[in-house]
Picture (cartoon, rainbow, N blue to C red):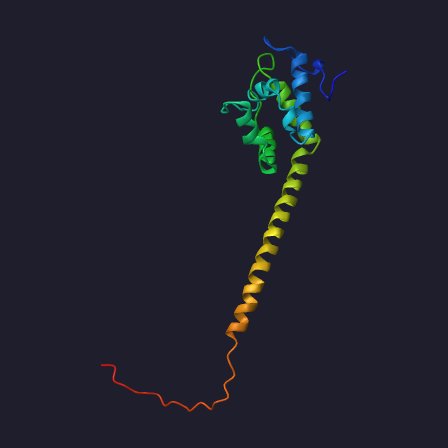
Amino acid sequence: MPKGPFLPSDFVPTKFSTAADKASFGNAFLHFVDSDFERSLFSKKFYNRLSNCFSHIAHYNLTQFYEEWFSCLTDRVRFLKHTLRFPCYGDPACTFSDVERAIQREIVDRNYLARYGLRLAEEQQAAELALLKQLKDKYRTSAAECEQDAQPAVSTAVESPVAPVQGVLF
């Protein structure tokens, strides 16, 4: 029984990977996203396959890859966008292009990008509101003090008018 929507019969085996390997990777990918990119699910085996899919070839190790794509919500949204933009090149008999396309369809069907995008927007709004509160607290006190200092003192002495002085400019 598969642990996800993908079955081996959905994919074409390659010279080095069976159709079951492909289905297993696709299901592991979706499980990883469903878990909110849980670090413990990012195994060496999963990293090795993912680093060779969706044009992910410029990372040196598992830790660097994870930190680049999954360390915060902004990175996770960027990862999903990257995954959806990839054109899935290659012959399924030689590559995982059939799995990549199937994963893309599931990302769209499960509405992952919109869901993570909404969470990101909420996170950003909360951070901005917290900053706004912090700035209001800081500057309200300062502004109130400045207003008190800027109030003109009421003078009881009668000021005598000063006649303007005229002079020659040249």
